[in-house]
Image (cartoon, rainbow, N blue to C red; front, top):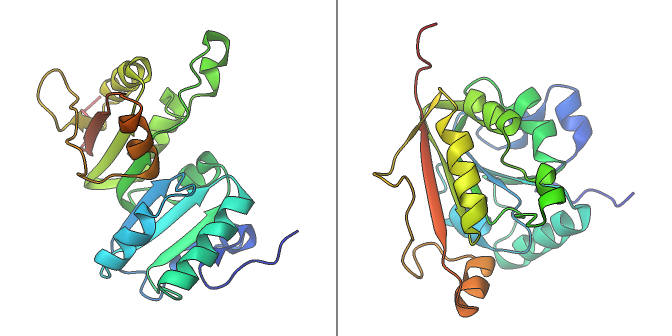
Length: 211
């Protein structure tokens, strides 16, 4: 097992013993924003540098990616007090440890669309996961998603619209094509260069309807 790269990398024991977010950041009182699957991209690092009065957590299922991310961050910016990463499937962290209402915003950039029909069950943004996201968002907190897959976008839009604790922030048809460079990630630049359209969704946490 690789040695954790402290302080930027939290380990699973931190979460299991109740420390988690409460002790991971220098100031745990700051608003918390979460990127699910930062991968090889610098978006999370750039966000943490640009917004020092917000805590930023990256949840990544690959330990190798976490370690590469931490090493790159240390080389570029040093041990930022408002940036932390955890190696774990997102569902393991969000429902048990970020609920209820602990997150000000989620960012999901280009989740794997699993385009083959028999693989669709592996898609991240299913009803159960969306329910966990909704429960963990503070009132008014936002979920922002980007994808290059029109089919996946339409499925996500349907699942998100069915969650009563979320409301769509965008006018009809409920999604948009962001302009180039708005908040470009590695995948966005790659897919734009390949001629693919980018689809963006934005939902906001609201009070669940009575009954």
